[in-house]
Image 1 (spheres, rainbow, N blue to C red):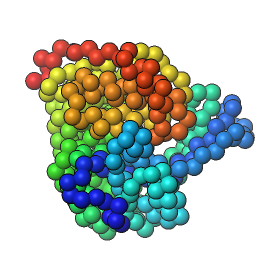
Image 2: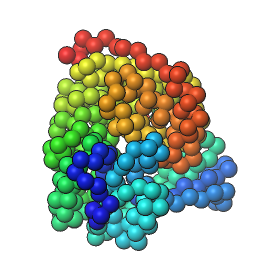
Image 3: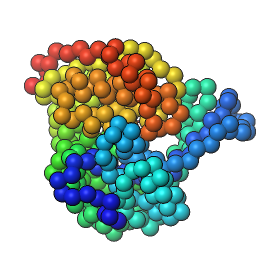
Image 4: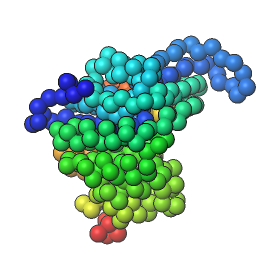
Length: 314
Ligand SMILES: Nc1ncnc2c1ncn2[C@@H]1O[C@H](COP(=O)(O)OP(=O)(O)OP(=O)(O)O)[C@@H](O)[C@H]1O
Ligand SMILES: [Mg+2]
């Protein structure tokens, strides 16, 4: 299982996908509710947010390791596609079959049908936690992404964060987000909807500050075509995208998380500008996990980072 792992000093980014999926994407010229459609293209590949983050990191030239839980025939297909994609994996087996997710891309919009995934048993979770320690100890940064599968407690990510000796970036929602924030991750990356749901606050700056005060070291809230706001103890910033792009925005958040992980050594303004450019570059790509280099190169110089009044962060 760990045969792909390198030595203890090797720097790489570990991405955790507890609810890995076989992603099926259909291109449909004009989606109409209640009608049948023939897709003009069908793609099937390994997904789940952590896998998408690893794909983007791999495209950016970073060493990655994919871990999480997979099972059944769909699990075998996920494992095989991870390897075909050039990613290294240390996935753990679970009893139930991995889920499928279906995305229908039509007229520049994406419609998703996501199975919840099988129930994870207590013993499968205990095996994962046991093996996770060694994987996390070898990583330079750990990314925890996506929903929790049925059967895991809301504090599953919090348990992993407490067991991680390196910086952790957490991208999830609802109770797992709130429990995870209390375990003091380095960065949390909610989108606008997740931030409102978690905090009850409509203003993203106020919502991000609320998560900061609950324990996150930094909060990067992604706001779709409106860019991002970031709140940390080192300062707060608003980052704007120079233009609204059309395409498949599913996976733009994963590209944002990948950029935040890859840019951990940068100063915040550069790290954020990179995150906006790389996530925007995901939008023109039909499949989550891909980024368009030309879009990145075109947008990167035009991204503006504006400092917000930092007094409230202290
Ligand atoms: N239409 C768009 N045009 C330009 N940039 C975009 C667009 N949509 C998203 N982005 C970029 O991608 C980032 C993340 O987008 P968003 O807030 O939609 O993430 P998300 O909802 O978490 O996505 P995901 O489906 O991957 O979870 C934004 O902060 C922005 O930089
Ligand atoms: Mg997201």
